[in-house]
Image (cartoon, rainbow, N blue to C red; front, side, top):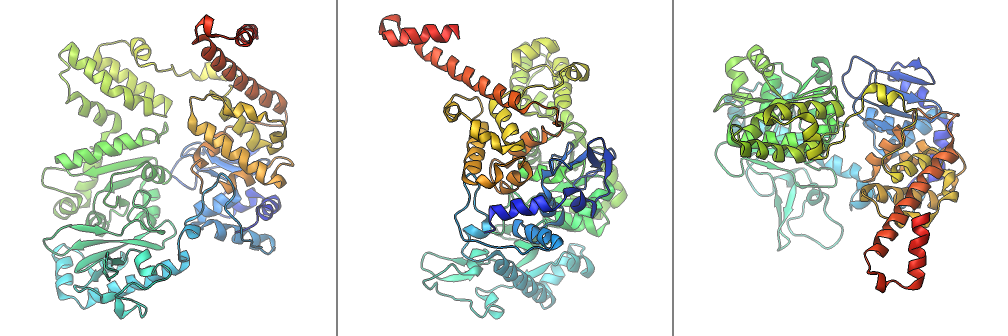
Length: 591
């Protein structure tokens, strides 16, 4: 592990403006700098870099971080690589230390696995070369790919290979391939999912007699495989299991290779199968990606929206395709921001992207993309089909089914548009629906402008902002207030993790250490909340009264505790209260 004090010193030495300007042209915008975001396609700059706070934030896709975070996200580096890269730039040596993970921050995958990630990546590369070589010598596999319309150039570009039939073929290239499990560390072949170990300790190749599709991560490194049977057989597709390198819910097939095409086209098409992606690419539709045998997850949506403003899900028109589309819709509601677009294209019955583009060609397929249903249209079309809108009962059912979906929508303007459409379909007024569904009205830009410093809805969010901006306020914190009630257990947990971290590393308490603090939470479940809180401090300057901000947050927490205690005392009968409790209740009433 790299000492925290070193990273603090490193971030004090590097200037985030210099780091980012090597890759992205920045323009001065008041006290900050701005640019079109390098992580998603946009025409109006929403990417802001603060030279005083030393972090960047994109108001479009939510990308956020310090100089280390930028090198990880833009350069595709891991945490250690990013720190080493920045250290090389300023000419300092990176020390190391052996210690436990710091409080509040989870271990990296490298720390949790028995083998180093570098060794596992090498294992995957060797296996890929083996499978590609086997494809050249397999007449049946080559015949299958030709029958599917693939050229040799396309197969080479996607590094497609073939896993031959047989139980221990990988022994040809791995001299340490062991058929029987010995005692000792986990075998890297088992750890990467290439080899299966049964209950008797015997080992054999996971992939046999299958076309092999390597899966690359955002750095272009092979982390898994998808294997398809040549003809009939179950399962039709067999994917690598979850490993230290590979999480299906976080990776997308071909995202690494399609990034440039996605930005040039201004959109990405999400399909269900590897062959769909490969066939589309062969017909010059190079901006397609696929999920990996799992439903579209929020992580997938986040990754896609960082690449482009326009995401089109292209699924089969059958029941399974519509079910997959609905899952994608549900998991995207909380990720969308205004200005982004998600739409859904359902191909004619019996067609998938592979078969359709081979029959109709690129132009016809792209014309079909133009007919995709916007998320709002698909949502109400699907729910309206489940209820009879000619009856009061049917319209009431529609409102109830929309309610939990509306509650997830984070984009205020989209939420407003969905509410208006619901009013049209249900016959209720917008105001009635807002009251019924307990939806807070979105303030107009004019009304928001009249409030120069809106206070966060939660005192925990408020505390996060102050402590991230100036960790030294930890010395003034009343710890007992953190044990009070909260409507957001996630925010309370994030504050607790942040406080524990600052307590543990006093070297960051001496001033404004926000960028270095956020850096340490790169692999934490609280990362998103902390980044959001820090982004809200972008408008803070020297004129802000930090003492007042901190005191305001503590006052809110005290009030929450007071009300909780009053509720506890009020719930008791008068005769059950002790004299001390009666005096306490009177004091709380007057405070």
